[in-house]
Image 1: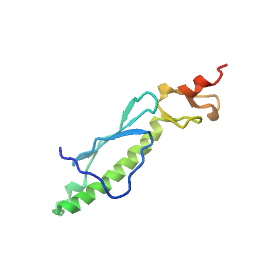
Image 2: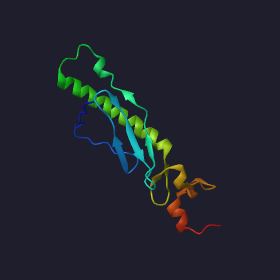
Image 3: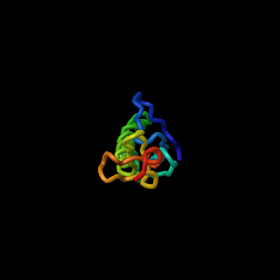
Image 4: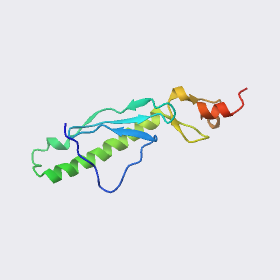
Length: 121
């Protein structure tokens, strides 16, 4: 499937340090990776609905519709990624549950690396 680029001057920042855009002309999908172990989470695949508009024959207009839906799909996936990864209070990494230590109080929530630097009781 053909890929279109979304270059409208405003780059979106992913919740995790590493992410991948799998979108093509018909669908939108994104991967986000744990900042520690690189475990991948893949967003739900969303179809491009602007292509269903029978009155859009101009290729540039279709690309603009696609870019708008792409931004929206990325923003939704980015929000979902916030629910799939944990934020380390110490170093700021966004990590999966396997790389996270849940404390008794929220301030004690840290990644495995930071927990290793602390004295364990």
